Length: 78
Image (cartoon, rainbow, N blue to C red; front, side, top):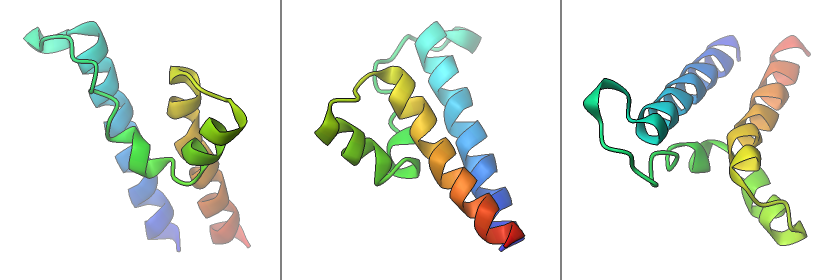
């Protein structure tokens, strides 16, 4: 279970990095509104539930995968 948590966290960090690159135009990249698309599957099902109850915004899309990371960490340490 440890490797699942590590792989998930690495994917989460890479997705956050790609969001920052696309949002701020780092490394000569054009600013792209779809740069956070890789965070969406990592945050399922929390981003869908958040949308249903009215929690929208970039901050929720960024933090939704952290819930899954916390669950994976809990399962690993259990």
